[in-house]
Amino acid sequence: MNCKKESNIKSCTCTYEPCPRKGVCCDCVAYHRGSSELPGCYFTPEAERTYDRSIVNFLRLKKNS
Image (cartoon, rainbow, N blue to C red; front, side, top):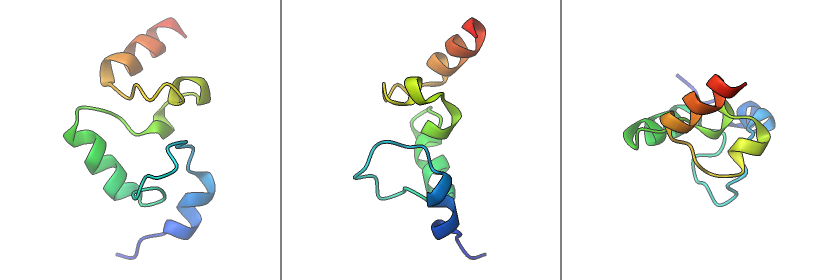
C-alpha cells in the first residue's frame, strides 16, 4: 500500500509543526494509540491547539457539545 502523504497533508489539521508523522495517517494513529490518545484531526481546531489529545478529553468535549 502506498502512503498518500501528499494528499493527506492538505487536509491534516494538526498544528504541531515539527511532527514527523504529519500527513502519514497510519503512523499518526499508531503513535497516538500507543499513548492512549487520538490524533489531532479528531478534535475541533480550538481543542486541537491545547494538545490534550487524551480519550478522556475527547469524550468530555463530545459530551459537552
